[in-house]
Length: 167
Length: 253
Figure 1 (cartoon, rainbow over the protein chains, first blue to last red):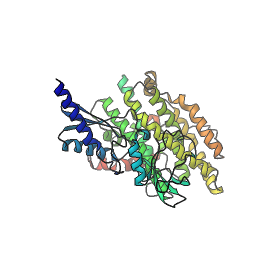
Figure 2 (cartoon, rainbow over the protein chains, first blue to last red):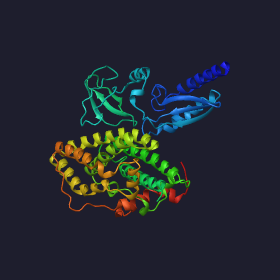
Figure 3 (cartoon, one colour):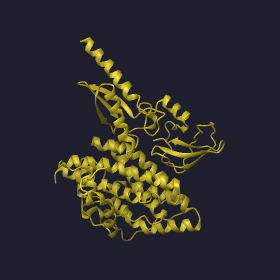
Figure 4 (spheres, helix red, strand yellow):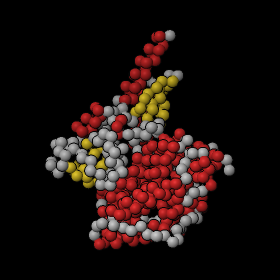
């Protein structure tokens, strides 16, 4: 039944490609796969199941992301289901290297990898400006335009920017 | 009481804490002292609401009577809510709001850490994995404010001291157990709240020391919420929280 097995893996690759190309609704420069939100796409009895892990408990984009992924799979000709996976919890370490570079090019400073400063008061992590690269930046607010971002300003080029905060 | 009754009641208690505090904090949206903090407070409320939703949805499944997260959040009577009194306290000024949030987050952070690392319940471990990180952020954000204000101007220090005096006697209830919680602790599903007291006391003591605030002695802790006995403010809060579902039952957006 080698043909069936290889057809299956071709279908699975096609389903993954369709779902993985969906842009994040709030940070459209990166895809849900690059952000690490789309964990896997599996095929069961001809139904494509997208395994999705939300970034934050209350992230309002969760439903929009799930609908968009489902629509992309339907467009590609699959019956589709969404499986919301809560464990293990999403971490910024799941953002791919391409995703991090796209964030920077878009003007959002990517998260510092493996930061352990989350509990430290007045944490001293240095965030480089995504525009000019300067490390002379200042935190304006722990919270930004979406739950996943903090607000910074660059003291070298005077440009305000978002930092994709590390969790 | 069966094991699922105990888990249901324990989940409701935790979910009620998150929902009621989320509603209180959301009252700041559009009214915070500056734009950045308006976004900050709204984000704190959103984290708590997300956690409440996951917990209510799971509680509804455990109960097995077809009640949804909305039914549990919006269609119960005041005496059926099991949140502690701390989370229903009115916002007061910014010092009161940020201190209340610190007191609560300093309890929930180790609570979720315990669940994520030790709980025998896989669904709760999943919720906790995310909530633990969010609560770490809350402790840090609110702790920074408490230090900034406590060690700030005469005015900000006086307001922080007034907030401590106005709220500290509500914190004891965070550590109050219930038969349902104790039953869940015996199953290794949830921690016994009292076991988190030492960590909480150390966190608050450390932040207060930097903020030049003293931890007051409390002679008469205020309790009652955990058994459904709430303060006058709770009814007013629920009137607003439940209005749409009461006026238009089963409505959805």
